Length: 283
Image 1 (cartoon, rainbow, N blue to C red):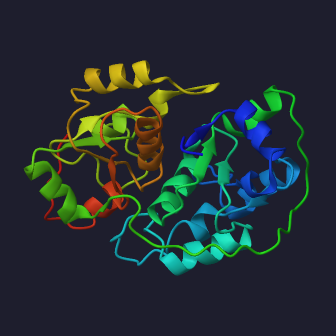
Image 2 (cartoon, one colour; image 1 turned 180 degrees about the vertical axis):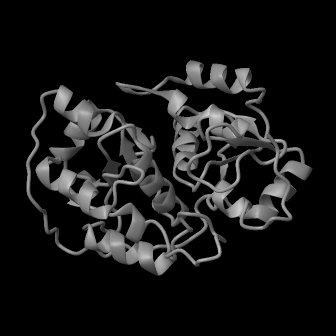
């Protein structure tokens, strides 16, 4: 399993294949501001058969430090991720497929964190639960208690940047893509973070512009969007957003469609950047 995006047909085929190739299914239901209880309630109502629930806030993010450093979803420790994935049944050598209810934000964050920690057989179900049910495939409700996994994580599978790393990336000629909605990039209608604007030199490429109701757009559309944003397919690329969730979504779109080199992710993103008032802001 080399493609980080799977269709419903591909996933269904894997579920009935040889046991070592059958994926562990993990539901990463998440909506900004919904809270863990609401996300888990949505999972309990309906999910893929055998899928365990994984909470983005408590497993895929470290606790907030209180001074804003690290952003609103700080990069989680390896111990936190390993314990969370094991609780969800993730096992060494077995593929793992993350999904959500759409448009893929929670699942993409899980995929990127897992890939950073060395899980190359991690993927996202393209279109998520909506695509699965639209295909008439089986679902179930209630909780799933999987057999505990034994996965062992090793950080470094993807390039992770901090604020200093972003500045070095730009100084070295790399391009930086802002995955937030365009109005937030411009500094308009900022209702989430206390400072509006973007990192100087960043280009606007909203992550959610690269998905439709059916899933992620194809490579031609991704290349077109990147070009219109002023970007290039042959330059080192880094991505960020507000708190490292939409950035993972954009990283997934670029990597899955083979557009440019594998991007680095500034997980702290805008919410970390503005924690230091000496850092420049552009509108």
